[in-house]
Image (cartoon, rainbow over all chains, first blue to last red):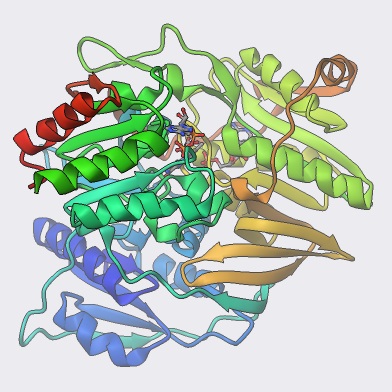
Length: 317
Length: 255
Ligand SMILES: Cc1cc2nc3c(=O)[nH]c(=O)nc-3n(C[C@H](O)[C@H](O)[C@H](O)COP(=O)(O)OP(=O)(O)OC[C@H]3O[C@@H](n4cnc5c(N)ncnc54)[C@H](O)[C@@H]3O)c2cc1C
Ligand SMILES: Nc1ncnc2c1ncn2[C@@H]1O[C@H](COP(=O)(O)O)[C@@H](O)[C@H]1O
């Protein structure tokens, strides 16, 4: 069954891919197949959400990681010959997609943020970010299948439809892998979703110590908002969880107000706030790039400005 | 003692790209640099050599102008460089870059143990070349790694995944892509630059390679991202803070 293939590690990611898949399938009159790793019970759910076929990937051995499915997926793809293959752009999803693309000798659009058929309805045009966020690159894939990875939360999840039917098929178990998992350290994920927040206070390296983040938190509380950060704050300093990192390698946000404190405003960060209604910033360097992309910027020390802002907000309300 | 290959790309520094009048990209005042995360790949290769001995080869595919990048890379500690150069090599897409690297490694580097790549290149950030290269060479691939070591005949790495961290092991030879958190790249000094110019560079031309396949991914458009903002500045005196908060209220983004 040629058509649209999707692969995601998690259900919520799969629902977004199914949404794109259904749209593309309707345009081309083909079917949607979902690869489902691990849990066969979810097959019915995937079918209700738009899959015409669910390909069950058997559970992995304890020392195997997700990419162990590579040979199984590649074999099946060679037989089924899908037109389009979409993968969720999680770390393992990205690696797996690149390796599948290499084996199928096809092109892959990484971190695709938009897909559309061109006027003739023949080529799937895909958009992605290049040069750290300075540019939008449009690509087409000249070989089959057309592959893309899609960052989680780029598209809406699909809604279930009653009475949908589909096939369920089991794929063979993956062979032993050369990469063996010795140990797993599971991190409890932050449950807050700042992609929906109306106000986001972003913390940058202008903060001297983790305790000082209280300043940002107080501002966020006063404005009914949430806290986000730059990559060095989450990845290098580990002061905030990874899912709060805004930008090219983090999340995209679209709040009414973004207020950056001690954020330099380099393009890789700024590309994540492009859709904010208002961008504001506090930075002590008047030449910081953030002032070139902010609506309102305070030139000054955040340790001086933030308490004053807090006071002014309290006074006004 | 291990032979380690560090792959790096010589890229346009995106901070200098401007938006042209018609929304095109204005490259007229750009500078070049070693792709940010590739500096971490080189540093990690040199660090591993420090603890296990062996040698480090810095490898790049680029235009002849990337000579500067080769020097820069060598000033960061590798023993030698492999420079695959052609005037057309600024238009490669990831599948082609990976194929070229694989061709050169297979045909010219005997007995390598570990290949290090960056998490993604600063210009394309495709996050593909490493994984594709591993597939071409049919060696294990471990990506998004924040800690790595060699232990006997295997590589042990701590890698970032959706749910947290996985500690994994794979037999050598293997390929690892590194996160920037893995180390702090050195800033080469004058002495490093001087020694770099004495290190051997193996230069390979397009004609020395197997015929290059066509692009699988075609770029059909490249436009500058828009960021039109008011750009009004304020001070920190009381009156300025009031004016700032008023500006936000007028925009109705706060109540
Ligand atoms: C491929 C790639 C992907 C990346 N992805 C991301 C991403 O997704 N998200 C991201 O954020 N970054 C990303 N980066 C990193 C990005 O390029 C920047 O390095 C990062 O955003 C800088 O973070 P920062 O502004 O906190 O720190 P810095 O650049 O160090 O800036 C700190 C700022 O604070 C100011 N400051 C210092 N003290 C004070 C004070 N007391 N009061 C007021 N201001 C003060 C300084 O003037 C300075 O401007 C990526 C980089 C690459 C190469
Ligand atoms: N032209 C190149 N020459 C050498 N290595 C490269 C080149 N392009 C990419 N790489 C390596 O592959 C990694 C991922 O690149 P990319 O797939 O473009 O994001 C980079 O961090 C480099 O280590």
